[in-house]
Amino acid sequence: MYKYSTGLLAVISLLTLNGPAQALDSITYPLVQKGYQEMTHGSALSSIDTFSQAVRTAPNDPVPRRYMAYALLKAGLNESAIEQFQQLSLMELIPPQDQVTFGIALLDAGLTKQAADQFSNCLDTNPKIIPARMGLIIAYQNLGEKSKAEEQCVHGMKNAKTKGEWLAFYHTYSSIKQNMSQTSGEASGNTRIESPSTRPDTYKRSESGG
Image (cartoon, rainbow, N blue to C red; front, top):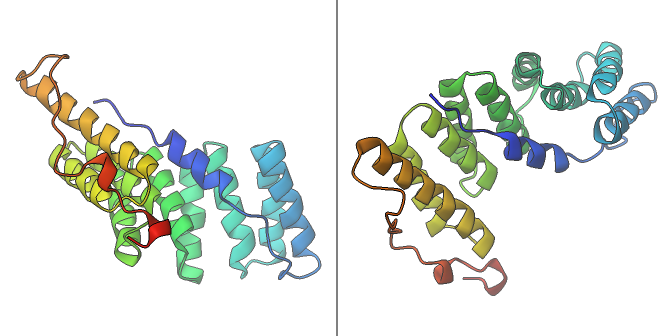
């Protein structure tokens, strides 16, 4: 069965990762800062070595472990990234961005059901997190639960705040419907896909308070 990719979500997650705040001790902070620079501008593998030093220096501080999890994900070492996120979840309540990234690592490691649960938990905390909903859609597709994936697309379209968000969910929705039709033999590649009752000119504009 074809597996839908989380590549774009992983890129977004890494791009939105900010540098460390200088709240660490004088030994750990330079290591984390160095590792962050290596991860964002150089080699993920080099940054893993640097973050590992930081974790050994401050084993009870979640910050170095968090950055190492992201570096491991960037390096494609999903199972190791999962271990770090699991450790983080025992140390603190991990923020939504990290929950999404944890879900990406689970999905890429083939732990699809666990990934779906992770994305779902993230949305329970904040239903407006777009990457979490996209991740959940991918997980449902890979689980073969197309109807659930379709429902999440419709939810995303109805609650989109920008035209870009609406289009992202609509194109995904259309792809799911097309694949379902082709699988059942009920439609050809030229079949027109009808959208649900959510039009691109009805998305909610946050700037207007609507």
